[in-house]
Image 1 (spheres, rainbow, N blue to C red):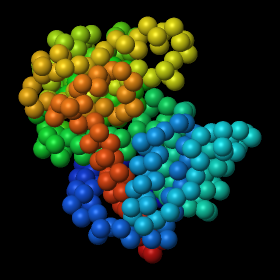
Image 2 (image 1 turned 90 degrees about the vertical axis):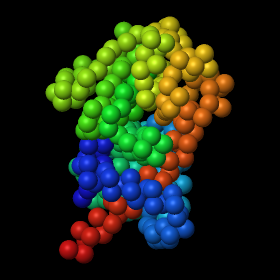
Image 3 (image 1 turned 135 degrees about the vertical axis):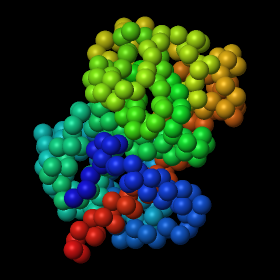
Image 4 (image 1 turned 45 degrees about the vertical axis):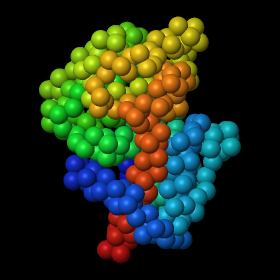
Length: 310
């Protein structure tokens, strides 16, 4: 059974197929309105979510399928001590495909080992968020027109930001990519990302503490919030949460065609005044999330059906 736990679970050819399918859905959504009739998506969200959960549900409904699941650990049998392995064994007999978000790194992978339906990782702790990465890539492809020859800046919480970790890994497969990693010392990209992805693949990168000095160099600025839920010490969160705030004054230093992405939700790291700047594409990015999840559900269900008939 095929599962999507990491963005690199799709090779470049498969990724191109996914993005091409998503683009076709954008052009003609009606063509796919009955593609998943009588199919069910289970959304197992052990952690709060707005965009990811609702975009998965919207994607399945747009495909003519149905949904079931839970939106917090408190409303699941995990409160009674049920393991992820047991939960997915049960859900496999209720649904055709599953999207799982969990605060513990590796939980969706554990589920995939015990599942008889495709499992999609919808975010596991600070580790991976593959469907957000596919959304980011679709946004870049549609609005920038390329993946090669880009200087990409990541700003904010680069330590716990699973969207950052996933997108660095995905973009590292393209040519002439450069990263500028903008964060305070306490929220730098983990060493394993630098060693296993950047250094191992000879990807050039700079570590910066100043957004103002970095922004003129960028083709894409990927802003992130400082995640309160990842901190054990509230005092540290309060001290770091307003380290970077993107406003119109900083945007004036950027290239005319630079794109600003953000996985959302934002708190105050992007001033509302930036929303009217045509380079601010984070709400369009959220819209693309529905299309890319529609495409992924379709491809995984087609492959699962193919295995059954072989």
